[in-house]
Image 1 (cartoon, helix red, strand yellow):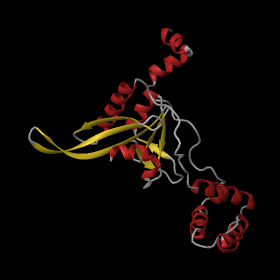
Image 2 (image 1 turned 30 degrees about the vertical axis):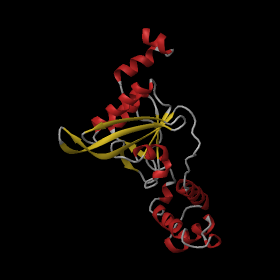
Image 3 (image 1 turned 90 degrees about the vertical axis):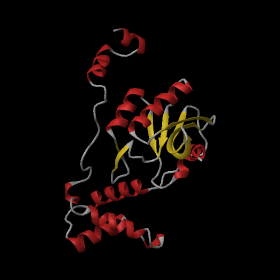
Image 4 (image 1 turned 90 degrees about the horizontal axis):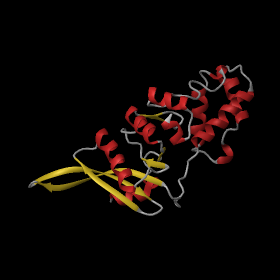
Length: 223
């Protein structure tokens, strides 16, 4: 009851949080298109991939894709479900750009490597970096290895150093946070990262694979 009063939430919500420290999974799962498209989505996806190599005026419309499915592959469904799938596939494949202006309260995280002399020996160490791009406030802490314990402890130490928790944190696609990148661009979080996020309640964001400039601030800090 005291926790419910302090945080301004229902007591039953506190009970659930005590029983389930990680938030329950929710949302749609599995296929989100008509069953009649089963077996044809790979064909559509390949057509759209091939279209990127030709002039924009020579690319397939949804109607033309429907005609090819019907005439070349024996598709018996309607044009509407093809149009819906093509629209969704084009939307998922669009490149997303991260703005270079940064609002207060958002952070970026990355790891770097360096060699140092510790107790007279040359040692390769890994350093955790968290940067607040709006104010350029940096936090750096070195660890023996880039492992889950260092990843978690780095966050805890950074939050204590800054005296608060960012609203969101931008990462690369490190395996410490991302177990798998799914076909639609969504990320399956690692169990360790989901637990960390569940405890501190920050929003996660991920840069495009191979695009380090998405989190240029922390990349500069690593350098």
